[in-house]
Amino acid sequence: MEKCVERDLAYRLRSFEPVIDALARMKRSRRGAEQWAVWQTDQQQRQENKERLAREEAERARQQDLASLGQERERELVQLVRDALDRTEGKPTREDTMAANKLFRRYGIPADRAKQVFSEVWKEWAKCNRCKS
Image 1 (cartoon, one colour):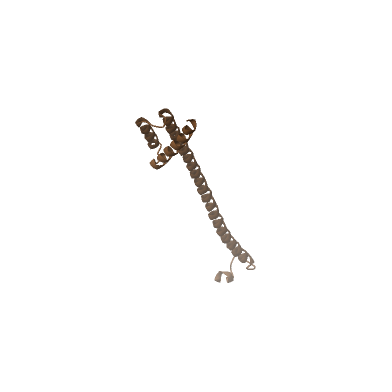
Image 2 (cartoon, helix red, strand yellow; image 1 turned 135 degrees about the horizontal axis):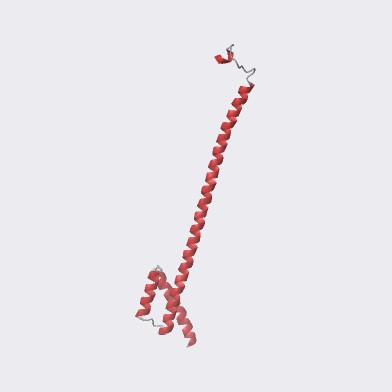
C-alpha cells in the first residue's frame, strides 16, 4: 500500500478500476479453471463409462458365443446318442457309452447335463420307435 502513495513513481494508475478489473479477471480465470477441471472429470467419467459398457457388451457377446457353442456341442452329443440308439435298436454298446462319455468330457458338458440329454434322447427315441412298431 505504501507504493500506491509514493510520490516519485514513474507510473501511477489514475484510479483503482484497472486493479479491480485485473482482480475480476483473476477470479474468472480461477472459476474457469474450476469449470475446466469439472469438465475434464466429467469427460473422464464418460470415457470410463463408455469403456465399461464396451467391456460389458463384449462379455455378453462372449457369453452368447459360449452358450451357442454349448448348444452346438449338446446337439453333437444328442446326434451321437441317437445314432447309437438307432444302430443298436435301443441298446447302446459299451463302446457307444465310452464314446459319449469321451465327447461330453472333451466338451466340458457337466455329467448331470449329459445324463439329462441321454434321458431325453432315449425317451424321444423310445416314443418314436413304439410308433413304428
